[in-house]
Image (cartoon, rainbow, N blue to C red; front, side):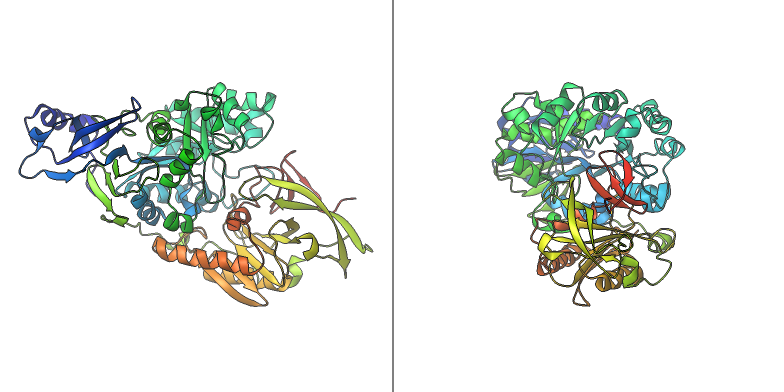
Amino acid sequence: MKKFPSWAEAAPRLIDVAAGRTPADMVIRGGIWVNVQSREVLDGYDVAIAEGRFAAIAPDLSYCIGGDTHVIEAEGRYMIPGFCDGHMHIESGMLIPAEFARAVIPHGTTTMFTDPHEIANVLGLRGVKLMHDEALMQPVNIFTQMPSCAPSAPGLETTGWEITPDDVTEAMAWPGIVGLGEMMNFPGVAAGDAKMLAEIAATQSAGKIVGGHYASPDLGKPFAAYVAGGPADDHEGTQESDAIERVRQGMRSMLRLGSAWYDVETQITAITEKGLDPRNFILCTDDCHSGTLVNDGHMNRVVRHAIECGCDPLIALQMATVNTATHFGLERELGSITPGRRADVILTSDLRSLPIETVIARGIVVAEAGEVKVPCPHLDWPADARNTVHLGKSLTAEDFILLAPEGANQVRAKVIGVVENQAPTKALTAELPVLDGAVQANEAQDVCYISLVERHRATGEVTNGLVSGFGYKGQMAIASTVAHDSHHMIVVGTSREDMAKAANRLGKVGGGITVWRDGAEIALVPLPVAGLMSDSPATEVAEQASGMVEAMAACGCNLNNAYMQHSLLALVVIPELRISDLGLVDVTRFELTDVIEG
C-alpha cells in the first residue's frame, strides 16, 4: 500500500492547490460546511483535496478544478468530518481489523483509537503487533494503544501472556502506537504499584496519552490517587457525577454507547443541564459486536443517540471528531474539515438522523450509499494465532459441579448478578438446595451455573460458581472463549451435561461461542483467530451472531445484548462479583472470596 504522506511532505502541493497554481485531486462542490472548530454551519462552500488532505475550503474553488480533478456535487448536503471512535476494542466485534474496518466504513467511521488488550491476554506482544500491522494496512485511520494490563488484576487471574513495562517501552516506538491502553488496574495505580507506574512513565516519556479505566463509584481518595497517577481519560462512568468529577480533575470524560453499554444518556446531562465545557467530552463505543455494526451502525449510532438525548447536534459532532483528535494530540492531523488535515469527510442530508450517503477517507471515496468501494486488506494470520484453545482433556459433567460442604442439604451462596445494559454486576446471595453433594441451580430464583474453563495452558482446571439475571429455562448451556479480559472459556448453563458438551465443542473448533439446548447445539459462532475473532466477512459473522442471540432467547433470555454481559463475567476489574481461574472475585475488595457462605 502506498505510504500516506505527512503534512510536511504534502505541504508544497497543498499550498499550490490553495493558491490556484495547480489543480486539486478532488473538489466537493456546493455543500454545507459543518465547521467543528468554530461550531458553525456554513452554506455554499467548496472543499479542495490534494495528497489525501484538505487544501482549501471556500465559497468558490472552481479555480482548483483541472481536467483530472474528481468533482463531487454535494448538492446542498452537509459536509461533516469523518467520525472518530475514542475508545474501542476491535476484538469485541468478533472481527479481525480488516473486516471491522469494512463493517464500519459505510457508517462514516474513518478513525479508531483501539486497545487490543483482548488478544494481548491470549498471544502477548506478538498478538498486539499482528493487530497493529493489519490496522496500518486499512484505508482508514486505525491507531493502536499499547495494552497496559495483562493480567488486568495480578493475583486474581492467570492470563495466557503477561504484558511488561519493557513491552510497553518497545511498542511506543511502533509507527501506529498512539498511547497506552486503558489502565484497568486502578487499585494498583492508586497504591503506587511500581509496574503500573513504569508503564505509565514509558508512555509519558514517549509523549503519548495514557488511557484510563476507573470502574469504582468511590470518587474520594482512591480516585484522587488514580488521577494523580497519570491516566488522561475515562470511559467507565455511568452517571452524571462521574462525568463531572472526571472533567473537573482534568480528565476527558468518554461517554460510551456499545452493544450493551448505555452510558451516554445518564451522563450527557453534565453538558445539557449542568453546562460543562463540551470540548472535554468524547463519544466512544468501547464494545460493539458484529450484529450491532452491520445492523445498527457504529459512531453514527452514538452521535445520533447523543442528539436524541438532548445534545446540540454540533456539540455531538465535536465529541465524535475534533475533541477526540485533540485529546490524542492529533488535532492538526484529523478531526475537522480544515486545511492540512486528512481528508476524512461524510456527506449527509440531515444533521439529526445522519444518513451516511458518501464517505471519503484520505481523499478517496471509500463508501457510497452503504457500500464499501475500496479493499480492506487482510494480514496472513499465522497458525499459532489460530490454535489457542487448549483444554488438556475432554470435560465431563462432573467437572462443572459446585461442591457443597459435607453433609449439607442446603447452602447460602454468593451469586453474580447480571445488570442489563451495564458492565457492573451485583453481589447477590441465594438459598440453594444440595443433591448428592452438589449445589443445584434454581430456575425459580433465576440462578444457574457459571464455570470458567482454563484454556491457555491445558491444565484441565474448571472454576465453578453461580450467576443470576439471564432468565434461562430448561436444559441449556452457552460457552464462549471470549471472556474479558483473561479470555479463558466462560460456560453458563442449567445443565452440567450441556455445559461439558459446549466446552468440548469450542475446544474442537478452535474457539468461539456455542449454545446448546436439550443435548444439541442450536447455534455456533466460530472465532478461529485467538478464539476471539473471525476473518470471515462481517455480514456472515453478524448472521451467525444473530443466530446466537436467537438461541439465547429460545433458552429463556430476554436481556438486551445479553452476550456482552456473558463475555464480561470474568472481568475482574469491574465490581461487584466476577469469576476467574483462581475462584470467585469480590471486586469491591479486590480479593478472592468463597462461593458458599458460612
